[in-house]
Image (cartoon, rainbow, N blue to C red):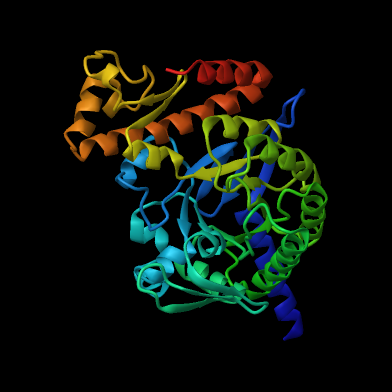
Length: 387
């Protein structure tokens, strides 16, 4: 029996290795930018990659076929929100999150740690768990590392994020260290709680804006041999140069043979700055949130369509935009928003998600062709010029 168990464990580990593989295909010669592939049970993700945010089982305003049309290969869902509505047990009963939302590609689920920090009222963090009130109906919720993994296993995502302790910045060094140490202990508990071999866990590096703590956290988590690593607790109000400084310190401390994920980032400029420093994966609500508010991203900077100067502008928003948007004038798109037509937010969200995907495709190609620095400089110059 013992021999059979050993064989079973070995087979399971081999299967897990087959399901999740990161391959570094090319390293830029002058920066830390890298071109890779990340294999998951629901498909291969070409990196660097941007994941559209589908917090509650939907990328807001977009039918799932539209999301696929943009070129997105992996999307993000959220443990906290989906456990409240419709309930992770409901999603599991209906076949898992992939089937529930009609997406057949890879899905990453965030653990709920950031939402506890940003949304929950009356939260209390203990070593055992986070205790907080639902932002929907005020009921008390207990979220432990084990419960976070149980929810994510019910959802059936390809990548489950460990539960971490996020604190406000700036903060006292001792507060940041305690949260960092707890995040590492919680990561170990998440690892121990895992039962699905078809779901990989990513650990989350914390440590505030302290370079030494970030490096220490990265090294301690690296020793636990997770399939991937994320950098959390950034892009929460600190100046962008501070975030870049932390990335400069943290990325080299992470395993080179595992994917690196910068959580919740961000502007197109931040994506290229992250790629330049060796980041592989990004997610952010900016494309859809700004799209719903009449702001479009282009190579010439942002376009705020509510501005009166676009009232009679016959030019297209972007010559390379999504097909549904490419033939429409800025004047028409502005009209949709001014008339409060729901088509406006839909089209601009589609345009923005497609723009982010195109930016990633172009970045990957630039790394492959050994011209990432020239590509980076060209994009930055265009964005700085404004629209």
